[in-house]
Amino acid sequence: MTRQSGSQSSRAVGVAPVVRVVAPLQLLAQAIPIALRSRGLVVVVDPDGSGGLGQQFPQVLLLINDLASPNDVRNSRRTISASGCPVLVLTSRERDLYWGPLLAAGAARVLPATASIDEVEAAIRGVWDDPEPTESEEHARLIREWQRFRCEHHEFTARMSLLSSPERTVLTGLCGGFGIAELAAELGVAETMVRSEVKSMLRKLSVRSQLAAVALVRRHGCPIMSALTLAGMPGEGQPGSAQPRVAP
Image 1 (cartoon, helix red, strand yellow):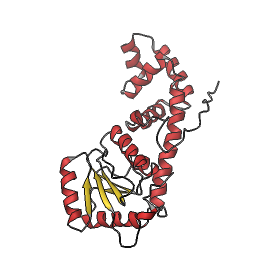
Image 2 (spheres, helix red, strand yellow):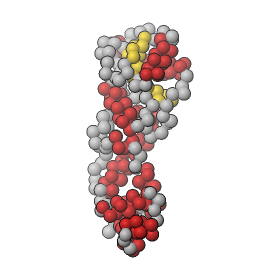
Image 3 (cartoon, helix red, strand yellow):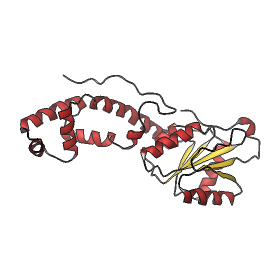
Image 4 (cartoon, one colour):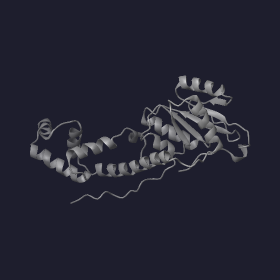
């Protein structure tokens, strides 16, 4: 992971950074800058992140995003990776899998939207004074969880590609709450055929039960992965591409 840092020449003692606020939500884009300016900070509002100040300005980027969708996470990662300065993220999203990708992209810190303006100001000054702080245990854990999930998802995607069309149909039905008998009636086939498809599907997914297969799909059907594709994510390499081994 590469940390973002400002120009070393601009870090003169006593020089405060310009805070560039990137906030798609207009209400936050107005309220937070006003509060920060009342603390003596110079704030520039850049709603969509397209108005960079240039490296001649000492700056900290404050990215405010509720991370409501996978696209929000993807776009936030791009903003962080292209920032060229310390980045602080403020989000209403609870601490979960969505935080890890931002930290892995180089965000110095992620704060919940419930943080007070005192905490936000302290965090801004903190990442400016030390843009490459020692990672906290929680910070490192969130990144590890994200990296582990990416590797697991890569394996899951490879295994899903092995399923035949009938096996995918059966798996979709199981995820929808259908039982074997209901699926057979719905598909107009014998229960023995459905059971055969289930057995083959479980073997290819390397799980032992229908419940385990459904749990696997629900975990990796997480909407974040529909936008954060495994290839080409900024700041990270491709997980191992070994083909899954399926038991005979």
